[in-house]
Image (cartoon, rainbow, N blue to C red; front, side, top):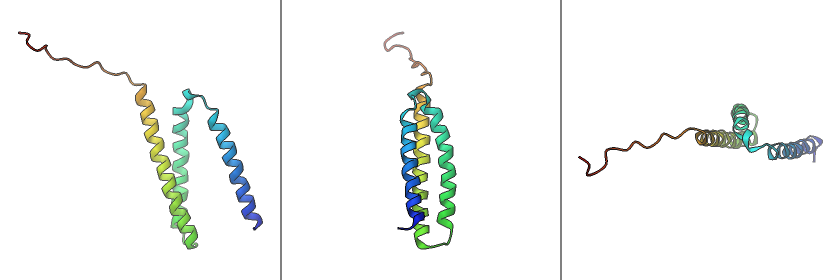
Length: 105
């Protein structure tokens, strides 16, 4: 294995561990604002993955770029769906409008 690959795997493992630790300790009240920030970051990663997929370096780089585009797109769309669902929980519901009672004249 090359030194660069080992270093890249080390950084990936460390980022995964730190990310899990940070996200698992967020209180439920902060999930909606956190999701909004995460969606912005996912949008940036989507742009980066589009650049990687469009570059003409090698077939492997294009395939990995396409996989990254798919994963980032799923992440952004899912994040917006979850954020929208959580925000709908906080909206006041309007009472149902009832028409005149049946049989009343």
